[in-house]
Image (spheres, rainbow, N blue to C red):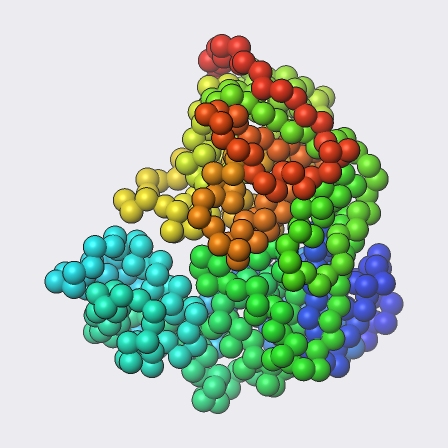
Length: 508
């Protein structure tokens, strides 16, 4: 398959081409928002095969979500055709299961089983934490410790004595019922690699979103790297998953794990307007310890960033609805008409071009109510998008999604900032920019840095238009990160008292 002039190299920037054509050693690539990371990764894999450096089954591409895995496979199928089917592309859990298949009677535990085991393990332990909170802590500790089984036996887990009892009983129940949870699956794969028991070897390994790996995932990468050439790609400025064990230091320590690694940067932002890139860059460079160059805009100037201030949650939500109706060129009274798509395009944007991002799911309630009242189609975030530490102990209700018949994909996305990672939209509203929400009270320095990164993630989801919204009530202070957005890149409006909103006809 030797194709030196292959089309996957067409259109790559010099920096992207350097990454895509290097295969003689490990690489650590910092890829900023909108820098063509997936395009570059696809080109790297395609070039490996084009130069006959390996067979397709000797390539492993690890992603953080099934959605990302699906996108990567789809793009590679377009470039490679049937060859892409032989690649192993998936999450760490998918890879682990492929590496060490479960043999009956061993199986993966259902979520209901895990909750049942924890509830049973709690009895008589003195632990008052809810099963959901305990499972969150358990998963965190397993991800933090590649030697978790030994630590569990020794009681060296940085948990309270009653929590330790629950964890030990939980492990015994899993063994009794011949089940593994997803965290056990990673630990099992790691043990297999370390013992040399697996026969599945890879010559080239790519790990996406490396800034979010846990200690166990880092250990898996190191073990794979003993027999394979590793490409780790991600962005420390988008490290936002500390609550589930992701630590940005693992990204920075890649050069310690792989001393011969080439360090490269993809700084060009092809996604957002110059104003959005400039504002986001001004915010993120305030985080100490950064080594990457700031993002560089490749698109021309667009409209200024809109700073919205409202006197209440409800007025904020109503104001956002009014702005959305302006953007789409009217209201949703004609939803029954199958020519709606054409009507939308008569305006600037359609519903699916718009995202509303909130810090927590609870903050989305007022926005959802206003959208519902206006008859605008939208989707709600799932509970998985919010850190478990920020969820109530009670079991979450089902995720409400407003279906829109034949237009079910044409919906405004209401997402948490965590849930927006990896997505992009022409129009983005970031809601809840008060100091009490972002960064929130009582945050230490590390947590404030992550909150700043979370804000950066939200800003860089926007392609054309970015709205930053907060309420001014009871003397609430603005998010401190807002002060770092250059004033010349913004337009600000004073709070307005909303007019009474009349319910509109909803036909979905």
